[in-house]
Amino acid sequence: MARPKKSSVRLHEPTSQRNVRLYTLEVFLLSGPITEKFAKENPEISRTIQIRGDQTLEDLHHALFDAFDRWDEHMYEFQFGKGPMDPKAPRYVLPDALVNMGEKNPLAGRVDRTSIDSLGLKVGRSFGYWFDFGDDWWHQINVEAIEDEAPAGKFPRVTKRVGKSSPQYAEEEE
Image 1 (cartoon, rainbow, N blue to C red):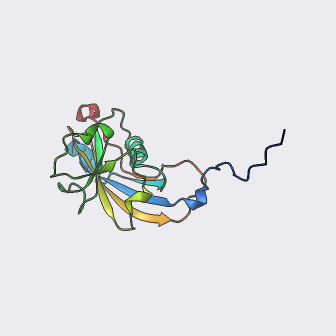
Image 2: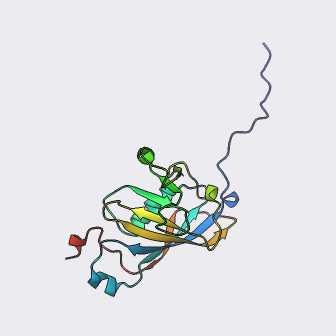
């Protein structure tokens, strides 16, 4: 019986982090159900988040959800138009939201299948994030930096917090 030849095929190795870009995003809360008192005490509410290019919009959502201290999941989407809250912006949505989209709001893709790298982001670009379609938490996300190599570590991660996180529901503020 002949011995099998040694294979020259190499096993797949994990993607090297140095081959993956790192994006720094500054996320501003634009509007939501907050009280005048809270807004006066926190005139700016923002978070800076770093995320790898091979991570998805879904990963970004989870980072935002945690960064703004939310606890009750709701539907959300990302919009890439002329700015946040652009009603004609191409939208990246949850898989369950793929029905009844209409031509007014073109569907660009699914959050769970869209990597950050695939968006073609450039420094200075901004886009929108809409969380909870009933309470309407609107955010503007600005691309602050793009590095060619992601360092070792866990991503996405929050690197800066400005202002307190507003309560997810106004009645929690009391």
